Image 1 (cartoon, protein in one colour):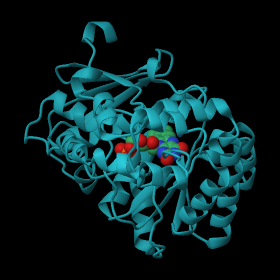
Image 2 (cartoon, rainbow, N blue to C red):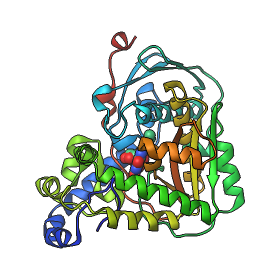
Image 3 (spheres, rainbow, N blue to C red):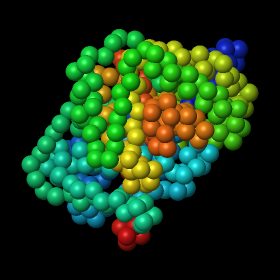
Image 4 (cartoon, protein in one colour):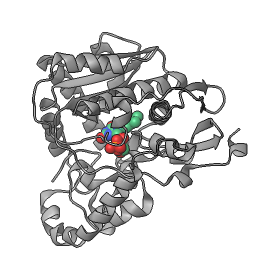
Length: 368
Ligand SMILES: Cc1cc2nc3c(=O)[nH]c(=O)nc-3n(C[C@H](O)[C@H](O)[C@H](O)COP(=O)(O)O)c2cc1C
């Protein structure tokens, strides 16, 4: 079953050969689901900073590499880039990394506000890219976005094609408003087809790049045991795929990469999604990438609150030549579009894992 390049790309013959092995791993799936649910346990009424950090780490992030470290001190928290978790091939200038930090910061601020700890964020662009958050005491402001934090997921499946009510589009637009970030919603068929064409062209380029495939393979988790041991990466069932023993997955991953089959799957995914959102920061720097992350996170949470699913179709912004062309197609030559997201209706897939909060925490003295 071939889904897309972020999946465990295994051809049909290989899949058939692996089915008995996949069945062996079934017992672990219950353990996997329990771990994913535990990470998303509801917060206590007056949660400590550690619990707020747990909610922050539920944020989306490129390849689920979780490229962050947290440091806490009373009502203060810092989020720092963890450069050992960079993905230099797909993200050579750490664009996705800083977008991911922005997503985590937004989760922390929303969760804090919901529990009477409204906060402010400061991003020091010239200080290694550290985000500082200060939480105060105030009125609890529990919102639909807050309730959606543990329910949100990237859903990499075909959607059901249902049209999107205009009221939902308005709510998505309103929720994702962040200063110096624009969000374009594309719903008409001809323009969604034009995006699909650009996704296919850029995806083909990426799949022809051995370095891209090798980097992706490093972040794939082929079975529940491997996913649980690492607590990160891209686990097959979160994209609707089967599980296989690690050594088989790692051996067959590149061999069975099939650009045509993947591109067909992308066509099905995009054609079944009634909307595509494009996020564009006013400038191409870390400060704006964090802002884009905050805007995208608010969009994703609002979508989840409305019962909508979303998934990234970022190929046109990841391949530099494709990005230039995409900006031109948007009528914004010279601008850097930041994210491309499809959205629509679909059942949920299994949730992804995160590392334990204690594994992402560093002492305050080291961070400051
Ligand atoms: C900046 C950024 C870029 C991403 N790019 C892609 C992508 O190109 N394709 C994809 O399928 N998912 C992409 N994702 C989604 C992540 O893979 C996903 O957030 C991560 O695996 C955790 O899963 P979750 O979102 O279900 O919690 C991206 C996420 C972020 C924040």
